[in-house]
Length: 458
Image 1 (cartoon, rainbow, N blue to C red):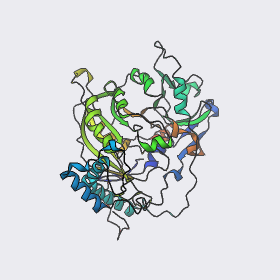
Image 2 (cartoon, one colour):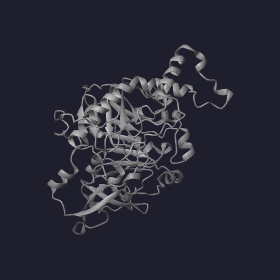
Image 3 (cartoon, helix red, strand yellow):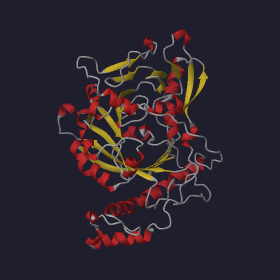
Image 4 (cartoon, rainbow, N blue to C red):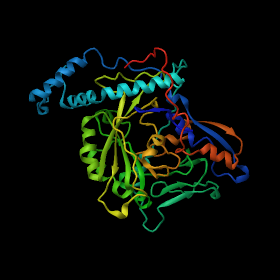
């Protein structure tokens, strides 16, 4: 089962929920003897991926219109006085734009046509095949689970890192899936299970996908991940970028941009490793990643892609030209080149080229900071048998290694519906777990005919 519903030269239409479910189609409970094991099927709650309405009135009546903002932008190219002096601290009129807003508008106008055209072609395909459609059902309440994992990571800083113990611990079938031996904060935990398993960790139940590994820690305790000894062919990260709304809301901790340079990418990446970073729509963050962060790590910048968020009926979740929230986020892609040390080479020299300005369209999760997995999209660029790592992760993926101070947040059982099922055969385990690198027949079909007069607003 693939999460790619449709692909063309513009990009991909993703079903983000299907990839979450892929690794948990078959699950067993921990701590039960083989004769007493019960099996069940897990599905991420569908209401988390029901986005029925777009926010069409975001901009308000007093915001600068696109034509007026174009005039401001044109003036900024000819008149240095548009670069406002921030030290005056005068109250800014609603009709004025600061330098950051001018930079963001210039970038938006540069990429707008690629996003509009790519999104329209992919949404039209989704409407034609029936994946995207008007959903009349009422919104169900979202699962709510208080997450204290980050606070526990802070408390765990007082635990000593013991140098002479193994940096990895295992969840094995022969252990009866006991969790009493697991030390989550100072060792990488690796599942050897061929199906998902429900574990009780720190008094809470979590669904752990098959053949995954994870480390629950913050940046100060990332060393066990380095000592794990793997060099990865694909590294994806979603940093907790610093911004005013995060500071005000206190929803999660943030990391100053300069601190990201402390991530030990050169110690984790194989040569040619694909490195992907999610970036917010703040021009300073994008410049930092391209001009400072990637060069610091020895990563060559190769492409910028765009994740476009649409409703279940295919409309932008925010107006494309909204001066506030945009319906897209940027991904910066590159490859680790390192220092040229031959001992750090990967398995082969062939690399699939990355096309610039590709578009990834999906219905976003209604849960905060729950990004879609890009495994099916990125694996061809990293290799079919690539070792994959996600940094600042909040969920786990089959076959991946994940790190973060909330790394198992969205594995909590409260986010899943559970249905009892029969005991599996070996063949059914293979079918249920699947291989995320298998080609999707649906994804390679020729484009369906366009729907008659699709109701889609660009």
